[in-house]
Image 1 (spheres, rainbow, N blue to C red):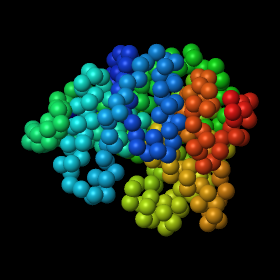
Image 2: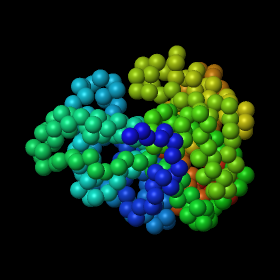
Image 3: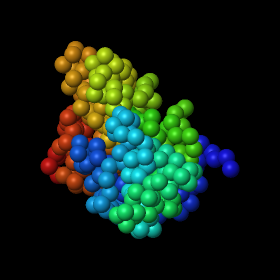
Image 4: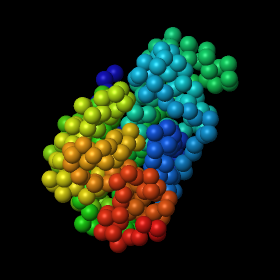
Length: 314
């Protein structure tokens, strides 16, 4: 049976869930813990229970990409993590484009190849786990968009006058089926920003990748990644972007942490703060700033907060 690449949120999620399993991101938890906490705070305000499990591990996708080991190990890791979710009879929601892509693709390999499923289960059953392929995998941004009207009703800090440029991330918009928009001309983030009272900015290079795949980020920063980012930020600066949002901690790391390096190499002073879309929603919904984790940012949000009439310590 063929599957559509781009689907409506009501088709993807016919009913809003009462509870979700939130799949932790190692990059998010280590680099920007406020991204994870923002999701919990936002979901609480939206009436959705967030369930987690300390037994969950990294999705292992980065190490697989770097050829640190053979694919069978990642298949077993995926099977074990998703088996945890199946014990709770929930669907899996991720907030990292990498976790989304790796979990979906590896789950597909397991479910479509009985030999792979048997191999993975043969490994994890030694510790009492078994994966059946029942839990579905979503990105939490899909739930935001599905609940966009509920979000709009709960805005208490409208983002009036704030010019926001979005970054979708290639690991989501490059997926082959069942996503909200492909890389052609996505707009669902901008729709959410408008509902929050902000002004979405369609800067020229909004669809440009962050350039920070594992190998390039560690081995080719100066000659590949930084010129790539310079082009993106120049485009955003020209259009007056005051804040940039992501839905992937890896993209957030590239776009936030590399800005001082660009300045040090005389490639531009941009000073555009970068946060997760969930943090932006949390800001508009009245989540206390301390719970949103903005202190982890390299490029500080002080100008943005001042524009919204907020104090850093509120």
